[in-house]
Image (tube, rainbow, N blue to C red; front, side, top):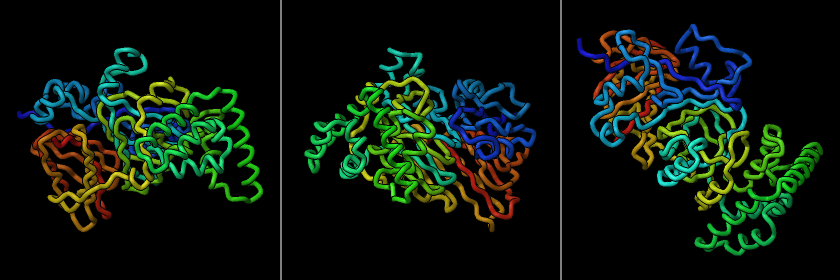
Length: 422
């Protein structure tokens, strides 16, 4: 009998403290959808669903005709399933990790190193930087999703220095004036911005805790008196301070763009792009790596000097950080999120209610398919038997295999597919 090359997966769940709790989490809902016997603990956070072959969360194969237990083992035995281009380019490894994130409290202010820096950090500090790969990533909102991403336009940062004297005090007058004088000079802006950010991140703990307490007290009093606090980004500051009291990361909101993504909108985080996720649920796809340089809003290892050195200090408005999706010219139901890196592409597949037969087209690379909404029966020559698809089903589809769906739900289907289009 020919081997099975399309099969469902049971995926790893990460219960990080910042995740949404119980069934308020999209991760938990998908878990129950995909496995009605899954037991959700009401008091536990369900932060991430990992769909891939990363050693820290290798997906399990849900097909007892297959002798290997996990996706990683199966790919090692069947490297041709990746597609010849992917197999050769990525040394027989699945190049991406696909995730669902459910964010309740902010994730650390962080950036991911490029390949060169990743290799250097891994060699020097393997306990903090577990591999030598880069980690570009993309987040696509499933619900309204908030984050910080990239440095704001300089005029906005200078505005906060005026309205938030506590912030200006941490940066210091000399650096603040240098930033003011650099306006309009693209070459000088980057250096001035780096100096301001580095000064703030390295300021003495007692000083920033004092300034933060003053700011929190002031904004709390202004809000209580019915005053508008948006000029000091009051609401977000109080929320972050309640989650991470006394953390320097609270002040980073004055440097970084506050992003609010509506469902279907995306942001792409290339190497050295400062960012933090704040709240909401998203699909995330990334290169298969776990390298993160952190500097605030976290109890984890903090490496301020590396972060300040590596960041991309090019200011740009929030609108420039939204990653554009594009219709797939070959399929009217597919939207492509295709960043300029080789490691991954994400497709959103929306099958309308009127369409009852749909074929997930074959690609010359392996893919992972997640059902977000809807029910169908899937057939594929490479599956040898029907697979019931419902909310939460995760399917591994080998290169050059198609999957035919007989759609049963009245409202159509929504699916996300991660792949690697070289």
